[in-house]
Image (cartoon, rainbow, N blue to C red; front, side, top):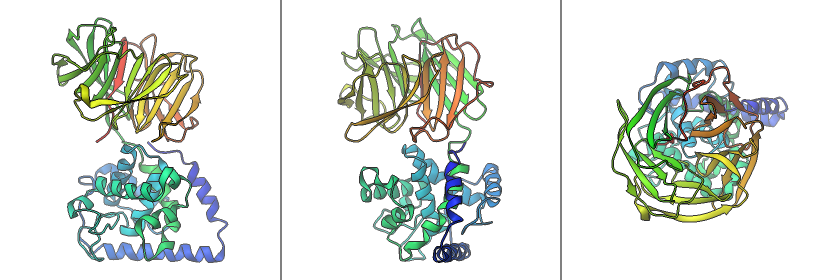
Length: 439
Protein backbone atom coordinates (compact mmCIF):
# COMPACT_ATOMS: atom_id res chain seq x y z
CA UNK A 1 0.00 0.00 0.00
CA UNK A 2 1.34 3.40 -0.99
CA UNK A 3 0.72 7.11 -0.86
CA UNK A 4 -0.38 8.56 -4.20
CA UNK A 5 2.57 8.98 -6.54
CA UNK A 6 1.60 12.44 -7.81
CA UNK A 7 4.40 14.11 -5.81
CA UNK A 8 6.98 12.04 -7.67
CA UNK A 9 5.84 13.44 -11.00
CA UNK A 10 6.05 16.98 -9.66
CA UNK A 11 9.52 16.41 -8.23
CA UNK A 12 10.73 14.70 -11.38
CA UNK A 13 9.56 17.63 -13.47
CA UNK A 14 11.46 19.98 -11.20
CA UNK A 15 14.68 18.07 -11.76
CA UNK A 16 14.61 18.80 -15.50
CA UNK A 17 14.84 22.58 -14.97
CA UNK A 18 17.77 22.70 -12.54
CA UNK A 19 20.27 25.47 -13.10
CA UNK A 20 23.86 24.50 -13.75
CA UNK A 21 24.80 25.45 -10.17
CA UNK A 22 21.92 23.50 -8.69
CA UNK A 23 22.71 20.51 -10.86
CA UNK A 24 26.30 20.53 -9.59
CA UNK A 25 25.05 20.78 -6.00
CA UNK A 26 22.79 17.79 -6.61
CA UNK A 27 25.72 15.81 -8.01
CA UNK A 28 27.86 16.76 -5.01
CA UNK A 29 25.08 15.61 -2.67
CA UNK A 30 24.74 12.29 -4.53
CA UNK A 31 28.51 11.75 -4.37
CA UNK A 32 28.49 12.48 -0.64
CA UNK A 33 25.76 9.91 -0.03
CA UNK A 34 27.56 7.31 -2.14
CA UNK A 35 30.75 7.95 -0.18
CA UNK A 36 28.74 7.59 3.00
CA UNK A 37 27.39 4.23 1.78
CA UNK A 38 30.95 2.93 1.44
CA UNK A 39 31.93 4.40 4.80
CA UNK A 40 28.95 3.01 6.68
CA UNK A 41 29.59 -0.49 5.31
CA UNK A 42 32.37 -0.91 7.86
CA UNK A 43 30.29 0.21 10.85
CA UNK A 44 28.39 -1.94 13.31
CA UNK A 45 24.61 -1.75 12.99
CA UNK A 46 21.58 -2.65 15.06
CA UNK A 47 18.41 -4.26 13.66
CA UNK A 48 15.60 -1.89 12.74
CA UNK A 49 12.49 -4.02 12.63
CA UNK A 50 13.67 -7.52 13.37
CA UNK A 51 15.44 -9.47 10.67
CA UNK A 52 14.79 -8.27 7.10
CA UNK A 53 12.10 -10.31 5.36
CA UNK A 54 11.60 -11.62 1.84
CA UNK A 55 9.17 -8.72 1.32
CA UNK A 56 11.98 -6.33 2.26
CA UNK A 57 14.22 -7.98 -0.33
CA UNK A 58 11.51 -7.69 -2.98
CA UNK A 59 10.98 -4.01 -2.19
CA UNK A 60 14.73 -3.37 -2.31
CA UNK A 61 14.81 -4.82 -5.83
CA UNK A 62 11.91 -2.58 -6.87
CA UNK A 63 13.51 0.50 -5.39
CA UNK A 64 16.85 -0.17 -7.05
CA UNK A 65 14.97 0.04 -10.32
CA UNK A 66 13.68 3.57 -9.63
CA UNK A 67 16.12 5.38 -7.33
CA UNK A 68 18.29 7.91 -9.17
CA UNK A 69 20.11 9.87 -6.48
CA UNK A 70 22.62 9.05 -3.75
CA UNK A 71 21.19 5.60 -2.97
CA UNK A 72 20.94 4.51 -6.60
CA UNK A 73 21.52 0.72 -6.76
CA UNK A 74 22.23 0.68 -3.00
CA UNK A 75 18.94 -0.38 -1.43
CA UNK A 76 19.16 -3.59 0.55
CA UNK A 77 16.60 -5.59 2.49
CA UNK A 78 18.16 -4.17 5.67
CA UNK A 79 17.82 -0.56 4.48
CA UNK A 80 14.22 -1.27 3.48
CA UNK A 81 13.47 -2.66 6.96
CA UNK A 82 14.91 0.50 8.49
CA UNK A 83 12.99 2.81 6.15
CA UNK A 84 9.82 0.87 6.87
CA UNK A 85 10.35 1.35 10.62
CA UNK A 86 10.74 5.11 10.19
CA UNK A 87 7.66 5.43 7.96
CA UNK A 88 5.66 3.23 10.34
CA UNK A 89 6.54 5.53 13.27
CA UNK A 90 5.44 8.59 11.29
CA UNK A 91 2.13 7.01 10.39
CA UNK A 92 1.45 5.78 13.91
CA UNK A 93 1.92 9.36 15.06
CA UNK A 94 -0.82 10.39 12.66
CA UNK A 95 1.38 12.63 10.50
CA UNK A 96 1.16 12.74 6.73
CA UNK A 97 3.30 11.82 3.75
CA UNK A 98 5.43 14.97 3.88
CA UNK A 99 6.61 14.16 7.41
CA UNK A 100 7.69 10.71 6.22
CA UNK A 101 9.58 12.22 3.27
CA UNK A 102 11.35 14.67 5.61
CA UNK A 103 12.36 11.85 7.98
CA UNK A 104 13.57 9.54 5.20
CA UNK A 105 15.49 12.39 3.51
CA UNK A 106 17.28 12.96 6.81
CA UNK A 107 18.23 9.31 7.25
CA UNK A 108 19.52 9.05 3.66
CA UNK A 109 22.03 11.82 4.32
CA UNK A 110 22.86 10.98 7.94
CA UNK A 111 23.16 7.19 7.88
CA UNK A 112 22.17 5.96 4.40
CA UNK A 113 19.15 4.50 6.25
CA UNK A 114 21.26 2.20 8.45
CA UNK A 115 20.98 1.99 12.23
CA UNK A 116 24.62 2.70 13.09
CA UNK A 117 25.35 1.31 16.56
CA UNK A 118 28.91 2.54 17.12
CA UNK A 119 29.95 6.11 17.83
CA UNK A 120 32.12 6.98 14.85
CA UNK A 121 31.14 10.63 14.51
CA UNK A 122 31.42 12.28 17.93
CA UNK A 123 28.64 10.69 20.03
CA UNK A 124 26.17 10.15 17.17
CA UNK A 125 24.14 6.96 16.97
CA UNK A 126 21.33 5.48 14.94
CA UNK A 127 19.40 6.27 11.80
CA UNK A 128 19.34 10.01 12.47
CA UNK A 129 22.86 10.14 13.98
CA UNK A 130 21.52 11.68 17.18
CA UNK A 131 23.96 12.95 19.81
CA UNK A 132 24.10 12.03 23.50
CA UNK A 133 21.85 14.94 24.47
CA UNK A 134 18.97 13.30 22.59
CA UNK A 135 18.70 10.23 24.81
CA UNK A 136 20.32 6.98 25.87
CA UNK A 137 22.06 4.73 23.38
CA UNK A 138 19.18 2.25 23.58
CA UNK A 139 16.67 4.99 22.81
CA UNK A 140 18.61 6.35 19.84
CA UNK A 141 18.98 2.85 18.41
CA UNK A 142 15.23 2.25 18.68
CA UNK A 143 13.89 3.39 15.27
CA UNK A 144 10.46 4.30 16.64
CA UNK A 145 11.88 6.33 19.53
CA UNK A 146 14.49 8.02 17.31
CA UNK A 147 11.93 8.93 14.67
CA UNK A 148 9.54 10.37 17.23
CA UNK A 149 12.31 12.41 18.83
CA UNK A 150 13.22 13.78 15.39
CA UNK A 151 9.54 14.65 14.82
CA UNK A 152 9.27 16.22 18.30
CA UNK A 153 12.08 18.60 17.44
CA UNK A 154 10.72 19.22 13.97
CA UNK A 155 7.34 20.26 15.38
CA UNK A 156 9.03 22.44 18.03
CA UNK A 157 11.18 24.27 15.48
CA UNK A 158 8.29 24.55 13.00
CA UNK A 159 5.23 25.29 15.18
CA UNK A 160 1.62 25.28 14.00
CA UNK A 161 2.42 22.78 11.27
CA UNK A 162 4.70 25.19 9.39
CA UNK A 163 6.93 22.23 8.42
CA UNK A 164 4.19 21.29 5.95
CA UNK A 165 5.04 24.24 3.71
CA UNK A 166 8.70 24.93 4.54
CA UNK A 167 11.45 23.70 2.24
CA UNK A 168 12.25 20.07 3.11
CA UNK A 169 15.99 20.71 3.23
CA UNK A 170 15.43 23.62 5.59
CA UNK A 171 13.35 21.43 7.92
CA UNK A 172 16.00 18.70 7.97
CA UNK A 173 18.80 21.19 8.58
CA UNK A 174 17.09 23.09 11.37
CA UNK A 175 16.56 19.82 13.26
CA UNK A 176 19.93 18.25 12.51
CA UNK A 177 22.16 21.39 12.44
CA UNK A 178 24.49 19.69 9.97
CA UNK A 179 27.83 21.06 8.75
CA UNK A 180 26.56 20.22 5.24
CA UNK A 181 23.12 21.88 5.02
CA UNK A 182 22.81 21.66 1.23
CA UNK A 183 22.82 17.86 1.04
CA UNK A 184 19.27 17.21 2.25
CA UNK A 185 17.30 18.96 -0.48
CA UNK A 186 19.04 16.97 -3.19
CA UNK A 187 17.82 13.60 -1.83
CA UNK A 188 14.10 14.34 -1.55
CA UNK A 189 13.13 12.70 -4.85
CA UNK A 190 14.50 9.32 -3.76
CA UNK A 191 12.99 9.82 -0.30
CA UNK A 192 9.60 10.36 -1.95
CA UNK A 193 10.00 7.20 -4.01
CA UNK A 194 10.90 5.18 -0.89
CA UNK A 195 7.89 6.54 1.02
CA UNK A 196 5.55 5.79 -1.89
CA UNK A 197 6.79 2.20 -2.09
CA UNK A 198 6.82 1.39 1.62
CA UNK A 199 4.10 3.44 3.30
CA UNK A 200 1.23 1.59 4.92
CA UNK A 201 1.22 -1.33 7.36
CA UNK A 202 1.43 -4.06 4.73
CA UNK A 203 -0.56 -7.18 5.59
CA UNK A 204 -1.89 -6.73 9.11
CA UNK A 205 -4.74 -8.20 11.07
CA UNK A 206 -7.60 -5.76 11.40
CA UNK A 207 -9.72 -6.40 14.51
CA UNK A 208 -13.35 -5.31 14.52
CA UNK A 209 -15.67 -5.55 17.51
CA UNK A 210 -19.43 -5.38 17.12
CA UNK A 211 -22.69 -5.61 19.02
CA UNK A 212 -25.78 -7.54 18.00
CA UNK A 213 -29.37 -6.49 18.56
CA UNK A 214 -29.67 -8.92 21.50
CA UNK A 215 -26.75 -7.32 23.40
CA UNK A 216 -24.14 -9.96 22.54
CA UNK A 217 -20.71 -8.87 21.31
CA UNK A 218 -18.84 -10.03 18.20
CA UNK A 219 -15.17 -10.11 17.27
CA UNK A 220 -13.91 -10.42 13.69
CA UNK A 221 -10.48 -10.31 12.10
CA UNK A 222 -9.63 -9.32 8.53
CA UNK A 223 -6.42 -9.63 6.51
CA UNK A 224 -5.87 -6.03 5.41
CA UNK A 225 -4.05 -7.01 2.23
CA UNK A 226 -6.39 -9.66 0.85
CA UNK A 227 -9.60 -8.45 2.47
CA UNK A 228 -10.35 -11.96 3.71
CA UNK A 229 -12.24 -12.32 6.99
CA UNK A 230 -10.20 -14.80 9.01
CA UNK A 231 -12.27 -15.11 12.19
CA UNK A 232 -15.66 -14.27 13.63
CA UNK A 233 -16.72 -14.99 17.19
CA UNK A 234 -19.90 -14.11 19.05
CA UNK A 235 -20.19 -14.06 22.82
CA UNK A 236 -22.70 -16.39 24.43
CA UNK A 237 -23.46 -13.77 27.07
CA UNK A 238 -25.13 -10.41 26.59
CA UNK A 239 -23.77 -7.23 28.11
CA UNK A 240 -27.26 -6.77 29.60
CA UNK A 241 -28.62 -4.13 27.23
CA UNK A 242 -28.54 -3.12 23.58
CA UNK A 243 -25.64 -0.63 23.33
CA UNK A 244 -26.30 2.77 21.81
CA UNK A 245 -22.58 3.28 21.04
CA UNK A 246 -19.43 1.15 20.98
CA UNK A 247 -15.80 2.28 20.76
CA UNK A 248 -12.77 -0.06 20.85
CA UNK A 249 -9.84 1.43 22.79
CA UNK A 250 -7.55 -1.55 22.15
CA UNK A 251 -7.75 -5.27 21.53
CA UNK A 252 -9.11 -6.06 25.00
CA UNK A 253 -10.93 -2.89 26.10
CA UNK A 254 -14.21 -1.50 24.80
CA UNK A 255 -16.42 1.41 25.79
CA UNK A 256 -20.19 1.08 25.43
CA UNK A 257 -23.12 3.27 26.39
CA UNK A 258 -26.56 2.12 27.46
CA UNK A 259 -29.82 3.61 26.13
CA UNK A 260 -30.07 5.44 29.48
CA UNK A 261 -26.71 7.19 28.91
CA UNK A 262 -24.52 5.14 31.25
CA UNK A 263 -20.93 4.62 30.04
CA UNK A 264 -19.34 1.23 30.73
CA UNK A 265 -15.92 -0.30 30.19
CA UNK A 266 -15.93 -3.84 28.81
CA UNK A 267 -12.76 -5.85 29.53
CA UNK A 268 -12.30 -8.71 27.08
CA UNK A 269 -11.06 -11.89 28.77
CA UNK A 270 -10.35 -13.80 25.55
CA UNK A 271 -10.99 -13.49 21.83
CA UNK A 272 -8.88 -16.43 20.73
CA UNK A 273 -11.28 -19.35 20.31
CA UNK A 274 -14.27 -17.83 22.07
CA UNK A 275 -15.33 -14.33 23.06
CA UNK A 276 -15.80 -13.69 26.77
CA UNK A 277 -15.69 -10.56 28.89
CA UNK A 278 -15.68 -9.53 32.55
CA UNK A 279 -18.46 -7.86 34.47
CA UNK A 280 -18.91 -4.39 33.04
CA UNK A 281 -17.27 -1.46 34.86
CA UNK A 282 -19.54 1.62 35.15
CA UNK A 283 -17.81 4.91 34.23
CA UNK A 284 -20.56 7.45 34.88
CA UNK A 285 -23.80 8.74 33.43
CA UNK A 286 -24.81 11.51 31.08
CA UNK A 287 -23.37 9.89 27.97
CA UNK A 288 -26.26 10.56 25.60
CA UNK A 289 -24.11 10.51 22.48
CA UNK A 290 -25.43 9.13 19.23
CA UNK A 291 -22.00 7.69 18.39
CA UNK A 292 -18.48 7.38 19.85
CA UNK A 293 -15.09 6.60 18.31
CA UNK A 294 -11.49 6.44 19.56
CA UNK A 295 -8.60 7.76 17.45
CA UNK A 296 -5.91 5.51 18.98
CA UNK A 297 -3.99 8.48 20.40
CA UNK A 298 -5.82 9.26 23.63
CA UNK A 299 -8.78 11.09 22.13
CA UNK A 300 -12.38 9.92 22.31
CA UNK A 301 -14.79 11.66 19.96
CA UNK A 302 -18.55 11.64 20.14
CA UNK A 303 -21.53 13.28 18.51
CA UNK A 304 -24.55 14.37 20.52
CA UNK A 305 -27.35 16.48 19.05
CA UNK A 306 -25.16 17.32 16.07
CA UNK A 307 -22.24 18.54 18.21
CA UNK A 308 -18.77 17.02 17.85
CA UNK A 309 -17.29 16.55 21.33
CA UNK A 310 -13.80 15.41 22.33
CA UNK A 311 -12.49 13.78 25.50
CA UNK A 312 -9.06 12.74 26.70
CA UNK A 313 -8.57 9.08 27.67
CA UNK A 314 -5.47 8.81 29.85
CA UNK A 315 -5.28 5.04 30.49
CA UNK A 316 -5.62 1.89 28.35
CA UNK A 317 -8.27 0.69 30.81
CA UNK A 318 -9.64 3.96 32.13
CA UNK A 319 -11.54 4.56 35.32
CA UNK A 320 -14.25 7.23 35.36
CA UNK A 321 -11.74 9.92 36.39
CA UNK A 322 -9.46 9.03 33.48
CA UNK A 323 -11.91 10.10 30.78
CA UNK A 324 -12.23 13.87 30.88
CA UNK A 325 -11.24 17.13 29.28
CA UNK A 326 -14.61 17.48 27.56
CA UNK A 327 -14.57 20.07 24.76
CA UNK A 328 -17.31 20.89 22.28
CA UNK A 329 -15.56 21.17 18.92
CA UNK A 330 -18.49 22.48 16.92
CA UNK A 331 -22.11 22.05 15.86
CA UNK A 332 -23.74 20.97 12.61
CA UNK A 333 -22.18 17.49 12.54
CA UNK A 334 -25.19 15.63 11.18
CA UNK A 335 -23.57 12.24 10.78
CA UNK A 336 -24.91 8.71 10.61
CA UNK A 337 -21.52 7.13 11.53
CA UNK A 338 -17.98 8.21 12.48
CA UNK A 339 -14.57 6.53 12.86
CA UNK A 340 -11.23 7.69 14.22
CA UNK A 341 -8.49 7.43 11.58
CA UNK A 342 -5.45 8.96 13.30
CA UNK A 343 -4.35 11.46 15.93
CA UNK A 344 -7.28 13.92 16.06
CA UNK A 345 -8.66 12.77 12.70
CA UNK A 346 -12.27 11.69 12.30
CA UNK A 347 -13.95 10.14 9.27
CA UNK A 348 -17.69 9.96 8.86
CA UNK A 349 -20.66 9.53 6.58
CA UNK A 350 -23.21 12.33 6.79
CA UNK A 351 -26.95 11.85 6.91
CA UNK A 352 -27.00 13.00 3.27
CA UNK A 353 -24.66 10.14 2.32
CA UNK A 354 -21.33 11.87 1.69
CA UNK A 355 -17.96 10.78 3.06
CA UNK A 356 -16.38 13.50 5.23
CA UNK A 357 -12.94 13.89 6.81
CA UNK A 358 -12.23 16.17 9.79
CA UNK A 359 -9.02 17.26 11.50
CA UNK A 360 -9.12 18.85 14.95
CA UNK A 361 -6.18 21.15 15.74
CA UNK A 362 -4.48 21.61 19.11
CA UNK A 363 -6.60 24.73 19.77
CA UNK A 364 -9.76 22.70 18.97
CA UNK A 365 -10.41 24.51 15.71
CA UNK A 366 -11.29 22.10 12.94
CA UNK A 367 -11.08 21.58 9.21
CA UNK A 368 -13.49 19.38 7.28
CA UNK A 369 -13.93 18.39 3.64
CA UNK A 370 -16.07 16.07 1.55
CA UNK A 371 -14.00 13.14 0.26
CA UNK A 372 -16.67 11.42 -1.82
CA UNK A 373 -20.37 11.54 -2.69
CA UNK A 374 -22.84 8.68 -3.00
CA UNK A 375 -21.96 6.80 0.20
CA UNK A 376 -25.62 6.62 1.21
CA UNK A 377 -25.72 2.81 0.99
CA UNK A 378 -23.47 2.57 4.05
CA UNK A 379 -24.84 2.68 7.60
CA UNK A 380 -21.53 2.33 9.43
CA UNK A 381 -17.86 2.94 8.74
CA UNK A 382 -14.87 1.84 10.83
CA UNK A 383 -11.13 2.35 10.50
CA UNK A 384 -8.09 0.99 12.35
CA UNK A 385 -6.01 3.83 10.86
CA UNK A 386 -3.41 3.71 8.08
CA UNK A 387 -6.05 4.73 5.54
CA UNK A 388 -7.93 1.42 5.84
CA UNK A 389 -11.70 1.96 5.75
CA UNK A 390 -14.44 -0.69 6.14
CA UNK A 391 -18.05 0.25 5.38
CA UNK A 392 -21.13 -1.80 6.27
CA UNK A 393 -24.23 -1.69 4.11
CA UNK A 394 -27.73 -1.95 5.52
CA UNK A 395 -28.14 -5.37 3.90
CA UNK A 396 -25.09 -6.79 5.73
CA UNK A 397 -22.22 -6.46 3.25
CA UNK A 398 -18.81 -5.12 4.29
CA UNK A 399 -16.76 -3.24 1.69
CA UNK A 400 -13.14 -2.16 1.98
CA UNK A 401 -11.26 0.92 0.84
CA UNK A 402 -7.71 2.22 1.02
CA UNK A 403 -6.94 5.93 1.24
CA UNK A 404 -3.39 6.35 -0.07
CA UNK A 405 -2.99 9.53 1.99
CA UNK A 406 -5.67 9.74 4.69
CA UNK A 407 -4.41 13.12 5.93
CA UNK A 408 -4.47 15.20 2.74
CA UNK A 409 -8.15 16.22 2.97
CA UNK A 410 -8.58 14.89 -0.56
CA UNK A 411 -10.57 11.84 -1.59
CA UNK A 412 -9.19 11.44 -5.11
CA UNK A 413 -6.69 8.82 -3.93
CA UNK A 414 -9.20 6.52 -2.21
CA UNK A 415 -9.02 3.09 -3.79
CA UNK A 416 -12.11 0.90 -3.61
CA UNK A 417 -12.38 -2.87 -3.88
CA UNK A 418 -16.02 -3.07 -4.89
CA UNK A 419 -15.61 -6.34 -6.78
CA UNK A 420 -13.73 -7.91 -3.86
CA UNK A 421 -15.58 -7.03 -0.63
CA UNK A 422 -14.84 -8.60 2.72
CA UNK A 423 -18.34 -10.17 2.64
CA UNK A 424 -21.50 -9.66 0.62
CA UNK A 425 -23.74 -10.48 3.58
CA UNK A 426 -23.69 -11.54 7.24
CA UNK A 427 -22.63 -8.30 8.96
CA UNK A 428 -25.80 -7.82 10.98
CA UNK A 429 -24.20 -5.96 13.90
CA UNK A 430 -25.92 -2.77 15.01
CA UNK A 431 -22.60 -1.31 16.21
CA UNK A 432 -19.06 -1.76 14.87
CA UNK A 433 -15.66 -0.44 15.96
CA UNK A 434 -12.15 -1.25 14.75
CA UNK A 435 -9.19 -1.62 17.11
CA UNK A 436 -6.65 1.14 16.32
CA UNK A 437 -3.41 -0.07 14.70
CA UNK A 438 -1.05 1.81 17.01
CA UNK A 439 1.89 0.69 19.08
